[in-house]
Image 1: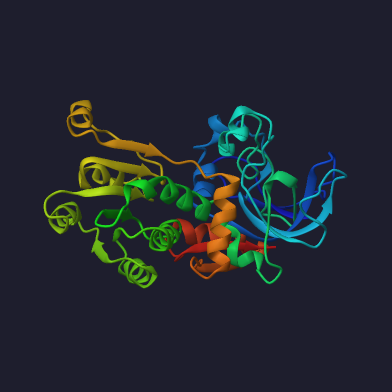
Image 2 (image 1 turned 90 degrees about the vertical axis):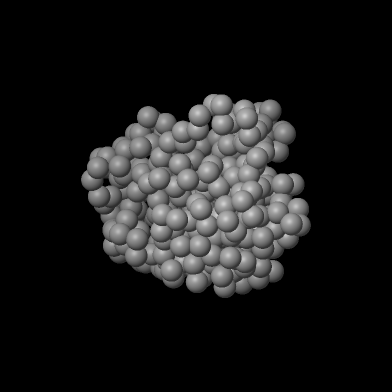
Length: 341
């Protein structure tokens, strides 16, 4: 089969011919990929930022946001059948460790992360686990939802955690209305009554944010922190959800908080620096977010199939994957880039 493989950090991936995956265990599932999302994490992987964390052996296949159709199943698989349309939780899990049993499965002690530390889905087929498969309505097109497997899941997971803080009358600032942010805005609009204020440098992204449920939009032009403080009556927001968290955004996010506010970090690449006296004197919180649980993904797909969350996508055939990488790196992708084998 064809696959997009990374051979060396700092170099472009390569379209290779590799053997088709095979069933090896009773809970194995082979999925024909109908769509594999591309995100900034893939760019960070190529740059080598994940090398020490993943310890993956090169070359390997990229692609950690995957959806498609079940083509083969192991002898013990009962939750999906050949022909089913599925979206794949990004971390196949063991189901037996304490984290799995607590419903905190993205912290499973025995999980893998296809596209990060094992072969991913930028290929014609992917070997995964029955525990990773979320069945979809047969009418759902995998390319339309693939990026929800990680970008959407991560956005939903952060919003889900913030819900108790976002009662009516509160303000939630969303930093970044791009590939993750535009999903987070829809989740906030569907699940809360908070006032949604979106900050982005791109006027087109802000226009999309307004269409998707933002109550206010603010251009990130250097004066935006002051604008947020003014917009909130001098108090700041109860919650800031940062889908950028690099290039200075990670320094500005905490400054938009009110006392006892919470800064949710989803994007990465920068470093949060807050004087400890400011943390204790205002009781602000910094909250990390790593993908989400299987149930988070199942809930997100209910919202999606009900028409409350949708992806704005640009598709590329597998043979044009390098163009997709270039377009994303240059900022020429609105929403999500999807590789369609």
